[in-house]
Image 1 (cartoon, protein in one colour):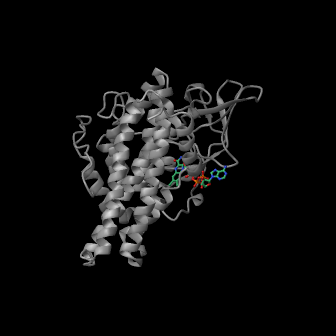
Image 2 (spheres, rainbow, N blue to C red):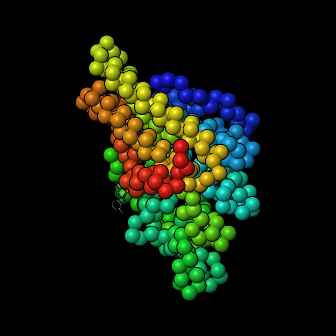
Image 3 (cartoon, rainbow, N blue to C red):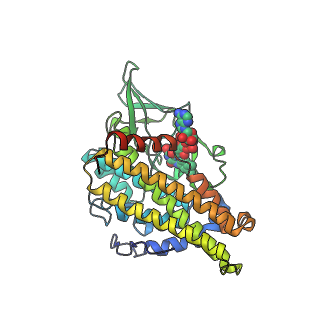
Amino acid sequence: MATSFPSNSHLSRDPSTEFISIEQLRRQFTEWSASTRHSQAFPHREMDALRQAGYLGVTLPGAPLDQRKASTAGLLRLLYQIGQGSLSVGRIYEGHINALYLIGVFGTPAQQERWYADARAGHLFGVWNTQMGDGIHFHPTATDDLRIQGSKSFCSGSVQVTRPIVPGVLHDHNGKELGWQMSVVALDRHSPPVDASFWTPVGMQNSVSHKIDFSDIVIARDELLGAPEDYNSQPHLSGGAIRFAAVHLGGGAAVYEATRTALRQAGRTADPYQRTRLAKMAIRLESGRHWLDRAGHVNDHSTDPREIVNYANMVRTAIADYCSEILQLAEVSVGVRGMLHPHPLARLHGDLTTYLRQPAPDATLESVGQYYFNDAPSD
Ligand SMILES: Cc1cc2nc3c(=O)[nH]c(=O)nc-3n(C[C@H](O)[C@H](O)[C@H](O)COP(=O)(O)OP(=O)(O)OC[C@H]3O[C@@H](n4cnc5c(N)ncnc54)[C@H](O)[C@@H]3O)c2cc1C
């Protein structure tokens, strides 16, 4: 790391699990990263390590980062560390944390008990909202269960995620549309067709963000989560962007480290231009970490949903810009040798460039301006 970022070494987990700090796991993920990328597959070793160390349950009630408590800054540091170790693992893990968060906000007590027990038992959760023209519809059956029609794209983790949140359009018995409804589909009880050929990205291969066809799966009413349109409610929808921003910045830290190592190995550390570029990278990283810490505070302590959403919009925009600049500085510093696989920078470059593509960046920035014209209190 360029400079200090408070660590999460204090996290104590389920006493039955062996204590493994997230820093140890991050170093392990970095060591595995070349062979994991080579596999192009789901990162089993990494996700098993997180599971065994208790991190799948770290935000559940009573756990060190209990989501009902003021734990967001700690969670963002955790996501940063995981992203630094592996952006694909960070993407899959962030989806798991997001799903448990939504269950915590919108689930009934009985659903929370059931799905939290599943998470403790090692089930991986995710949130698969993105779809194309052939998206998801829920139609009631004669027995008042729900038959699913349609597909999701970008299903990170693919069928290794056995408890995905799958939103779609809920219909009543007359076919009328009731709104955008979340469901939790138990994929260990179904085997939907998976289109892996959909996932041909320039990076992030290991997030295995496949297209999955849920058609003809029948689910019970109590597998619906919340009410129609709950998924789109604020600050929950946009406020969550601080989590993927934390993973992005972890990727930026990995690019910084790989650049520093490459320049040391090439004996190019005495050059003033190289020093200046490394300085700029370090400054952007440190700025991003300040944004994340402040975002954790705002998220935990603000009572104004508009402020929480606006802050998340600013954080994701600022960190995306820092990461893009870090990538550019790394390219110029190391040169083309850093673009040849298996150089670590080649992998990190592809991963971060791909993962930085998140929905509607223009509208996000525009809404920040709108907030300061219309909603923000005067300074
Ligand atoms: C590695 C990876 C994993 C993912 N995993 C998941 C997952 O597990 N679950 C999930 O639900 N999704 C997932 N996604 C999808 C993700 O959430 C976004 O939907 C996706 O990344 C959107 O990126 P985009 O660049 O296509 O965005 P877009 O919003 O299409 O933006 C592209 C450009 O178009 C502009 N634009 C947007 N809307 C308009 C408009 N109406 N008019 C004009 N211009 C417009 C934007 O500002 C931007 O400049 C994943 C994506 C990636 C990259």
